[in-house]
Image 1 (spheres, helix red, strand yellow):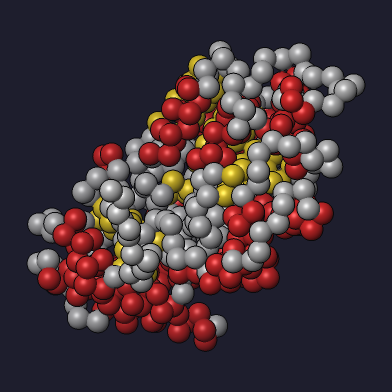
Image 2 (cartoon, rainbow, N blue to C red):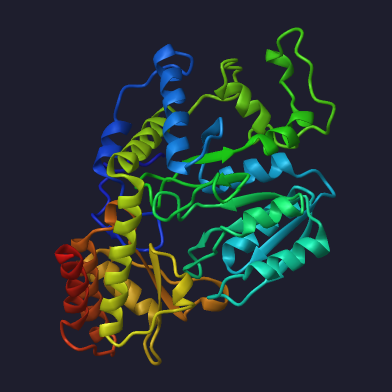
Amino acid sequence: MSELFGDLNPPPRLLMGPGPINVDPRVLRAMSMPMLGQFDPVFTGYMNEIMALSRQVWRTGNRWSLLVDGTARAAIEAILVSLIEPGDRVLVPVSGRFGQLLCEIAERAGAEVRVIETEWGTVFEPDRVEDALRRERPKLVAAVHGDTSTTMAQPLDEIGPLCRRYDALLFVDATATLGGMKLPIDEWQIDAAAAGLQKCLSGPSGSAPITFNERVVETLRPRHHIERGIRPEGIAEGEGAQIRSNYFDLPMLMDYWSEMRLNHHTEATTMLYGARECFRIALQEGLEARFARHALVGRALVEGLRAMGLGIFGDIANKMANVTGIAIPDGVDGDRVIRGMLEDFSIEIGTSFGPLRGKIWRIGTMAYNCRKDAVLTTLAAFEATLRQCGYSAPPGAGVDAALAVFRASEAA
């Protein structure tokens, strides 16, 4: 006998972990708009608007700036499985969990993966990357911009030019930074990038922005394939090896998003509405203002935590603006603190993975949750929870220190 469940009624949460974060109400409103058919001219007009808006958010002139229906990992996989042919050499600088993910996806695509590693909580100097480029001569370099597992942001402004010098393509996973930190695709000579909506763009997970340039298009062109059931007469296909995924086949997605409108899949209408609103909101605020807001709120959080006697994890000079790692004090049960924040205050924060499991907490200050009130509420709840778990911070010190940062900024 089947059960009848009650209405969905999730508890209200303040999502202050490393993502996902609370969806902007304007995005939720956009997602409630009526459905349209995927070839309705109004809908294809929205697809074109998505491309125009996302180019501005990516800061690129790339024609191919579109969406992959799926989570941020789907976008990463679409780019890697389309670019990599079995036996291609791929270089991955690994400094955290998500660099390891890039290795795994590249290996599944048949790549000969070469890895350079640095301690979690640090980033790569350009000369280390150049040494590896000179030694390995990869077809592709796959790097993470902001790795939320370590809260570090890898500087990329010198990496793109190095990849060009050694004739390698550069792919960047910008899942956790697009819309919250500077990432000028063209200026930094990034060839392809992928992101998600659920972090600095204040949307839900499930639609993933990508962008790629003509260097990538030239690499993909020999692998262009059209499904037999929709193949127009007179269109020649590429002579290269067929891409091993149908769903993540970038040339077929290009045909779908181009004027050809060759059917590939049924576009996720509601998610497209949401993505469009995410981009529109970011551009309405202004990217520089948005980056400054993330930097300010992140700095206020850091000063509040320090005033509570807590240590900030990792190389602070390369810390992400939107995610902060906090060293768990000796004798404090980190999981108990996370449970207390959720059960007593309905606030979610995160722990970490691998070698950092049980060693740090992570607090995110992203997009809609990147606000003074959200940070002050989180710091007050964190102080109370820590006290319940045996760690006593100076009463009110965290909130006072964060307020001082905000007031100094307001007075400037």
